[in-house]
Image (cartoon, rainbow, N blue to C red; front, side, top):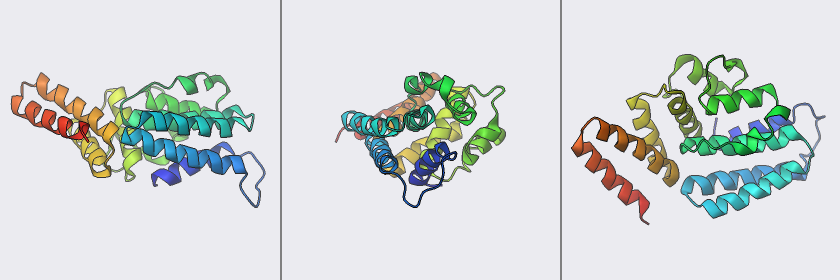
Amino acid sequence: MTTRTLIAALLAAALAACASKPQPPAWEGDARGALDGYTDDFLRGDTAAADAEFARARRASASTGRFDVVAQAELVRCGVKAAALDYDCAGFAALASDATPAQRAYAAYLDGRWQGLPAALLPEQHRTVVTSGVLAGVADPLSRLVAAGALLKAGRITPADIGLAVETASSQGWRRPLLAWLGVQERRASAAGDAAAVERIRRRIALATHD
């Protein structure tokens, strides 16, 4: 499942209780487009542009007057941030009591609260990560990074998973998650006393940091 398909599916799931219509309402297209823009800008490291796009997405979602729709937009943001090891999900937390069980399960997954987690309520690719602990089977790059972030928060990530997260972010040119995951590699190499690896990783961080 691609990033765009995932975002579209998440929004569609929030509207499953609504009667089908020949044309999707304007707010839905506005929200989806703004969430796409938010995702691109955040992963590239453009915070100001990402914040502006998310504000558009939230306004469009809030126009429905539905807590679950706004909660879904907030969850998309939480997932994208978790891909870069930013676990602040305050926007969803404020709506959690009005969210659906599936939405609350996904939020718990992102936050590493896996004990007693109803994995059956998660999107399929993330359900597999919880049940098998295998990251490499997640095909979509963003979903893979989200899953890696969840594994790290849950304390279940392996060195191979960290390396896969680094190379996934690198191959997509996603600076923000790349720097976050390189930072994890650097700290682990330093703790292991591997000076050569630390130097190599720091050079890579410096290269990715500067335009």
